[in-house]
Picture 1 (cartoon, chains in turn blue, yellow):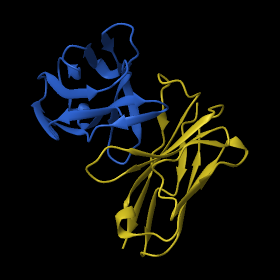
Picture 2 (spheres, one colour):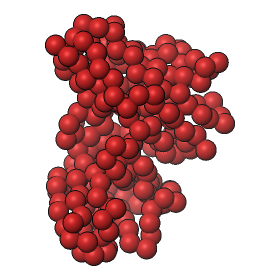
Picture 3 (cartoon, helix red, strand yellow):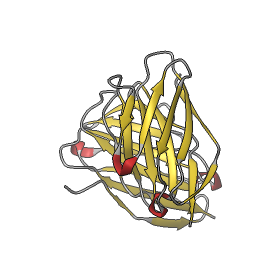
Length: 111
Length: 115
């Protein structure tokens, strides 16, 4: 079965600083990987997805992620954090017909 | 384009009571999912429909949970009787098909509190 591990349940950065949210996956088949964001009292919104094309994937709101097979990682980055980026972020892997989510990382942005 | 609609947004019930949640997916989306998100955890799939047929219900506690998708559009998820551990956010999502790369679009969720 496929699984993901998100390192760090909470990450705090200053406004304008680099955002790095970590995700490692375990998959017995070539993985399809997703990053979703969840704002308070809202559903999940897709940020970006890796579907075996380019290893560097660009998403919405300035986020991007790089698929590294050798490290089984799919870390999410943003060069400069904004206050509006404060939310919970979930990494997920496609397992057959379903998504398997990590436990999430809450991003706090300090002014 | 309208998103995935869910109701109610919040529900508080006593244990052993029953409760039902409703979901209206994005128009034209053949696949519908129900996820359970317990506080501090990622969403976990409960059941997946393709049109009005069940594709995967392996993680649905069938002794108390049931779901249906009549006419391949709207869906309801029911819990009867509810337990304290059912307190969670129930998320509905939809996608165009069942390809592994399909994007799932999520509704705002229903927050259930069981007292």
